[in-house]
Amino acid sequence: MVAAAEQRYGPGPFARMAVSSVVKISTYIFLTLPCPAGKGMTARPFGIAPADPLVTDASFARSEHLRALLWWLPLYLVVALIAIFLQPPIPLHSTRALAVAWDMWAHHQFLVPHINGAPYPEKAPLLFWLIHAGWAAFGVNDVWPRVLMVLIGATQLILAQALARRLFPEHAWIARTTPWLLLALAYGFLYGLQIMYDGLLAVWVLSAMLCLVPGPRRNRPRWIGFAICIGLGFLTKGPVMLVHTAPAWLLGPWWCAYARERRARWYGLGVAAVIGGCIILAAWVVPAIHTSGGAYTHNLIFKQTGGRVVNAFIHKRPFWWYVPWAAVLLFPFVLWPRMWAGVVTLRRPLHPGLRMLLAWLVPAFVIFSAFSGKQSYYLVPELPAAAIVMAAAITFLRARGDRIARSPWLGAWPLALGSFAAAALLFALPFAANAGKLHDHWLRDFASVGAPFGVLYLLLGALLLLPGRGELRRIAAASLIGAAGAYALFALAVYPAFDMRPAAQLLASAEARGHAIGNLGLYDGQFEFAGRMTKPVDRLYEGQFLQDWAAKHPHGLVISYPERLDPDDLRYGRLVQPYRGVWMVIWNAPTLATLRRGQQPPEPAVPTVLLPSPNYWRYANVESDRP
Image 1 (cartoon, one colour):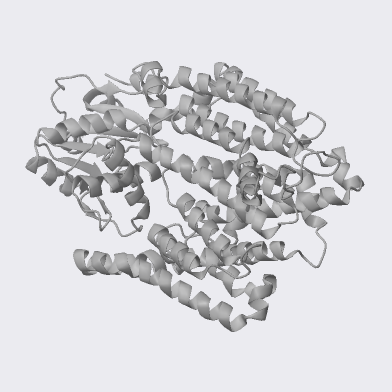
Image 2 (cartoon, rainbow, N blue to C red):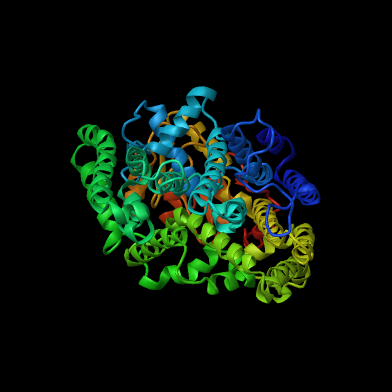
C-alpha cells in the first residue's frame, strides 16, 4: 500500500503525508500515555500478581510483558514503516545487498553469495536467506526486504527490554525505558532503514547475552542457546560475532556470581559453546568452499577477516576514529545533561548488571578501535548495551530524589535549542538561495523543500521544552520523529541522486535485446536488482581498453561517473542524472569511444533523458555552454 501510494503520488506529497501522520500519532500518544510505575505513582509494581485468583503468575507476567510493548512498539513500527518506504533502496549498501540476494535467486545459487555473476566473499549468507524466504512466500519484490529491516529493528527493541529486565529485575523502570532510549538513537534508527547486516547481527548478540545472563528461574546460562546464537552471528557477519560476545563471557566472574562460584564450568561450557558456533559456521563454509574453489576460500577466510584487522584494504582509519563517532552514535542523549549527571553520579560498587554491560561495551569499543578497518556501523550491536546503561543511570539518579535529579537546568533544553537551530537553518535556506549565496548543490536542493520541515523541528523543539513528567519519552519521540523527518527531507530534496530505477530500466532493456553493458570503474551491483538483470556488467577502464570494448560491442552501453558535466554529456548521452555527489551518464559505447578519441560522433537518434527533469537547476550552468 505504501509503495503504491509512492508510485501514484510521487515522493513529495507522500513525504508530507508521512510527516503529518507521524506528528498526529505522536500527539495522540503523549496525550494518552500513562506514566510508568515509580516513585509517587499508583500503577501496580511489576511482578505483583493481581488479587483475582483466576489469574496465574505466568499469565500475569505475560500480560505485563505485553503491556510493556503497548506504546513504544507501535510508535516505532509506524514511523519506521513510513520512513523506509519514502524512497527506493539507497545505493550502495542497500542496492548491493539486494543485488547479492537477487543474483543468488536468479541463478538458483543459494549456497554461495554472488554478485554480478561472481562469488561474493565479503558476507555470510544468512541475511540473503531471510530475504529469499520472503520472496518464496510473496514473490520477488523490494517490499519484503524493507519490512524485514523494520522487523529486525523491532526485535532489537524487544530483546533489549528483556535483557534489561534480566539484568535489573528489582528496577522495572529500567526495562520500561530501555526501548524508548534505543529507538531514540537517531543513528541506529536511520541505519536500520538500510538493508544491511549489523542490525541482524545485533539481534544475535542480544540473544546471546540473554542466554549468557542467568535468569530468576534459571541460575545458570543457557549454553546451547548461546552456541546457536554465536553460530547465527557467524552466518550473519562472520567471526566478528566473537568481538561482540566473547568479552562479556571471558569477564564473567567480574559480574556474575555463577561464574565466580563455578569458574571451570563457566569457561569449559563457554568454550564448548564457541566450538558449537564454529560447527554451525563450518556447516556452511565447508560446502561453500568446495563449490567455489581456492580464490573464494582465500578471500573469505583470510582477506575479509584478517584484511580488516591489520593493514586494512578498505576503511583504514586511525585508532581514535571512533571517539568522535561515539557522540554521533549516542545522539540525542549525548546532549541531555540529565543523562550525563546520572552517569557521573553512579556509585560504587557498581551494580552487577552495569558490570555486565561494561564488560560488553568497553572491550568491544577498544577492540574495534584497534582494528585497522573501521566503519561507524560496526558498533551498532553495542547500541542496546549503551541504551540500558543510560536507562540505569537515569533510574538510579531519580531514585535518589535529590536536587540534581529534579534540576530544570539538566533538562532537554540543549536539544530544544538544537531543534530550533535546525528550524532556523531550514527557514533561512530559501532566502540564501534566492540571494545567490548557496554554492553547495546539496544545500540548494534542500532549500527548495526545507521550509515545512522547519515547522516540524520548531514543533519538536517546543515539545522538548514542555515541563512535567515524561521528559525521557518526549526526548525519545522527538528524536524518532526528527530522524524520520530528516530522512523525509533527504527523500524529497536529493532522492534523484540515489534512485537507480530509471537507469536500471534502460540497462535492463538493453540486456533483454542482447546488448553488452560496461561500467567505467568499480561496479557495486547498484542496477542489478532494480532492473532484474541476470548477465554480468563488464568492468571497463579508460584508454585503449574502452576503445577495444566499444569496437567489440557496437550496440553496447557504457556507464560513466564524471565529477562535472560538459555540454557533450547532455548532447550525446543516453541518460544523465545526479549520483551520490557526482554524475552518472549512460552512453552508447561507440559514441563515448568517439568522444574519447577527440572526434565528433553523429547526432543521437533520440534526445538525452535528463533526470530528475530537464528543468533541474544544475543543468542550467551546463546548458549555457552548449553549441
